[in-house]
Length: 115
Length: 110
Image (cartoon, rainbow over all chains, first blue to last red; front, top):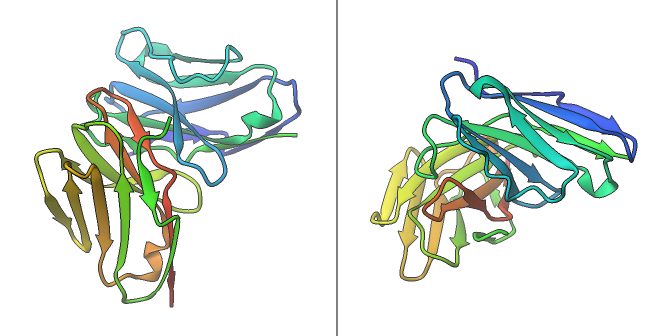
């Protein structure tokens, strides 16, 4: 079956512009995660959605970052007034059941470059 | 913040050799997972080991967990060129968040 998909795969934007990154999780997966990976680094947790519960936004680095998940499926991560330090690969993952006990399936990521 | 720390940061081996990398973490965990990442893009889940397990095998992979030392190791036997990737450990601190280390970059030379 289809895995997690993300779009765009690459995005180059000018400093100060807003960007939207999209994630389509695996159908039926209730949990959705966004991570950020800077060059040569591990993954930094950003936000977590589970069903209709309020998302855990504790990892968002600033109020320029926001995310929503419509209908319990597709999620959009929005970065307003982008800065050069926002350049990174943004990874989305989903899992069938929430919790670290269960495997997370990752999308291919969106490479964001802010010039 | 990252809880897991992989060691070494980079590893270069000849095809057919074994590759061993380690992961240390700070707080108690429910389980530990290892992921592989090719070309800086999506991660692929390799194996999960629970806190009450000491060793687990999956194909050419062998994972050990020592909760008293708060460490885990991943062994890849009979390495292949396709094993060239970055490997990350991720720990579950009794909630849904996974904490990833910075990874070990493995290069398998033909």
